[in-house]
Image 1 (cartoon, rainbow, N blue to C red):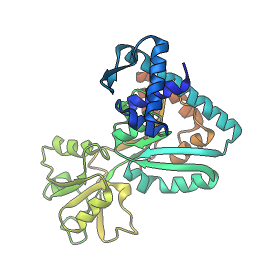
Image 2: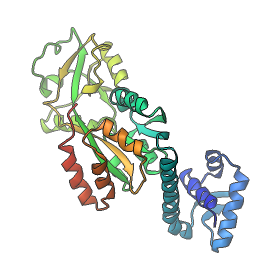
Image 3: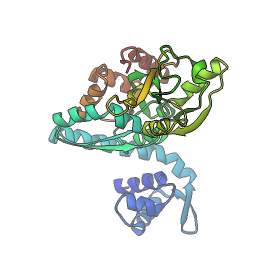
Image 4: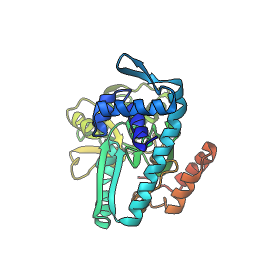
Length: 326
């Protein structure tokens, strides 16, 4: 049994039983992967994949029994490589961050600038996606860390670190009837068409819940994943915008009126996700603390070492109290 063969098995599963896609991902050939899988099956004495002609359709019973062990082995091999890299070149390497547009555009620029000045030898890679995509990338090891407000908790292989709390604001054209409203209410918002986030982005459910609790209708005329798109349509007069407070930039959005809505909605928590038992390079700990100062190395280690879900939730709630409100 060779490590390379286990990598092939894992990647085929990740690519939905598509050997060609797995070969492209691993920079090898489809016949080479097929040959190695056959050799591994001959050695084990059972088929790993169910086949229909030349196509793989699913894992066999034996394949399903072994895949968790395969992933554990590959995970630990990856940890060994990280340990070696930390010893050999502690200030150089790669840091892959999966995050949403909102985090990449508004929360991360200053952090990344400071981190890059401290670690010029570390190459940063930002991948933007939906919260579910971010969680998947982090859980599979494609990303070192994931940053989002929702969906990360759906993956058992991830440890969640509470970074900061945030709330929302309402944006309107400056000549809008609400523009000079000193104390905004949900009832006032309900009189106008609303432009806001799609579900699954920026904890949209918090907005809907607030209106439902007061038995008010929310007239959403347009949704988008990107706050910049929402602001564009607010400028056209299509509706008023409800966005994350951090998405308002006084330098660029001075033509819009911004109204505080923090008293109308429950605050949301942006979390950073890492894999259970993943070896974190020293510079990853530094990045985490730059992003959320209360998440010291000791705190991260404590959360990561806790396997019990209930205890994880207790610790999450404990450290949420230290997370700043933005």
